[in-house]
Image 1 (tube, helix red, strand yellow):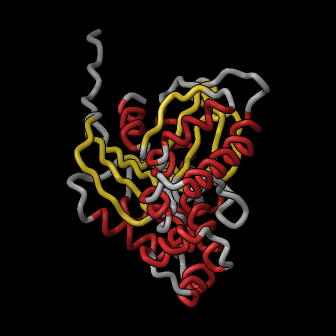
Image 2: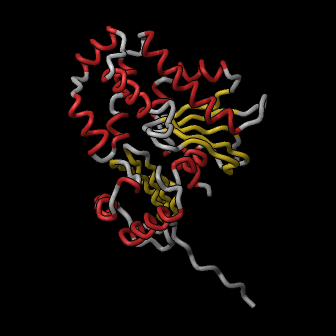
Length: 292
C-alpha cells in the first residue's frame, strides 16, 4: 500500500509580546523570521481596564501584515492566574488566533531569552525589578516583582522615588538639588498628582531615571545607583542561590544596561560572574520561538 503523504503545513504566524511597566515590544514571526516589529505603551493588566487593553491590541492588529496563528504574551502583572486568563481572553477576542494565547510574566520572557537550555540568575532592571534562578531552561525559583511601594530595588522607579523624596525633604546635596531644579523643574502638586492620583505612578518615577545617567559621573549619583544595585543583588540574587554556588548572571532592562559598569562592579564584589546585559529580551525571544 502506498504510504500516505502528509498534507503540507504552512508556517505558523507567531505574535510575540514582551511588556514592562513603561513599554511593550511586539514582533511577528513568519517561517522563523521576524517580519514585523512595533512598540506600544506598557501593558500591565493591574493598571489597565479591559477596554484600554483591547484598544491597544486593536491598534497593533490593524498594522499586522498577516493573520495570527499563535500568541505568546509576556508582561509584568501577569503572574496571577486570574490576570493570565483575563489577558488571554482579550487577546483571543481581538486577534482570533488558531490556538488560545499563552500569557505569562516578563520574567519568563527574560528566562527564555537567554536560551532554552541555559542556567543561571536572570534579573530584570527596568521600570521595576525582579529576578529568578534558571536551571536547564526552566525557572527554579524567583524573587522580587513587588512594585515600587514594596520593593523594586535597583529599578528606574526606585531611583526616581529616591530623587523625589530627597528633593521634597531637602535632603539632596546642594549640587544635586541645583541640577534637579535646573533639569527637572519639579513641582510638589504635580508630584502628588502623578504618584497618588494619576495612573502608572511607576512610569512617572522611572521617567526621572535618565537624570541619574546624565549625571552619572557625580559621586552622589554613582553611590546611590551602586547602593540600589547592591540591595537588588543581596535581596534577590543571593536569596536564590546557595553560598559559594557558581552561576552566571544575565541582566535585562534599560537601567541595568545604561549603568552596566556599576553593575559589573557590584557583581564582582559579590563574586558573581556576569553572563550578559541586554536592554530588552526581544531578540532572545525571537531566537527562542524560532527554534521551539
